[in-house]
Length: 365
Image (cartoon, rainbow, N blue to C red):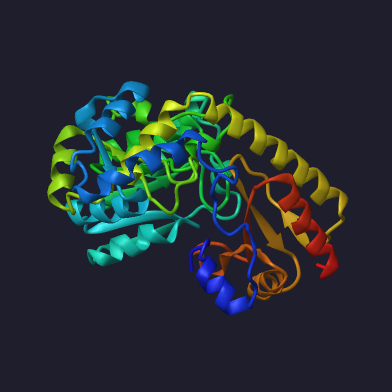
């Protein structure tokens, strides 16, 4: 089950209000101008939306420097994952795990043969340092073997659910191996905007170097638009044209297009959100350490969420206990490739994180 299902949670836990740490959404809401823009756009719902999402794609092109014909908008990154698999129809797919469940579901929907490669709870932190040329060559050679016979590889950074970052040097080594083996790569950077300035990089910068690269980007999470859904894919023009034929032409509604435009026009918003979330993250880690929660181990993260390993007990039971007290977290039992018991919590405002620790202590974890 995905996080963020408040209707189900209310029915299941018989609680009316929750602190929702189960979905990795910016807790500070969209830019303030979005609400006004939506009000002004309401009269447009009597017309079909622009099937090309032209204004939104032009704005993304302007901001990213990527040509307009290499950008496609969609009803969230989730819809675009399914559209990509429907268009590409790969026979063999490789997914480093743990990973977002929709990668495997979309691959299964086109009857692909799915293989898993273990990342584990440390995520990309375990990758050798590819800034050293010899290590970079070793990683490329290793991945050349891993990708033998694979048609499509999923990569994700910041990685969900571990919160780890794939360094650009490591990415380049893997991409070189993929190029040599004739493998397409879908790189999901849905949490790109949450990364601090010193560590943030985008795979979009490598689209010209690697024609086999496809980049997914989400506006839903950072701009707090989960109820509207908005995502984009960046790829070669020929693939963008193929994707258009494989999906509903009106998948991005009028309000989502207008909200996306307004959000992208607020250039002060990203830095403000990152600063606020960094304060919350530092606060949470400091308070967690001071709370002496010996049965729980908080993993490091560079994203807006964190893995917590249970040294004792059961993740499903802990999720239930927290839910009955009005706190929703993500039970990670269903994640392929996580050995042990884990929950994932979103990093939200300091009050929410303080409440989580208070409840942890109250239930003696």
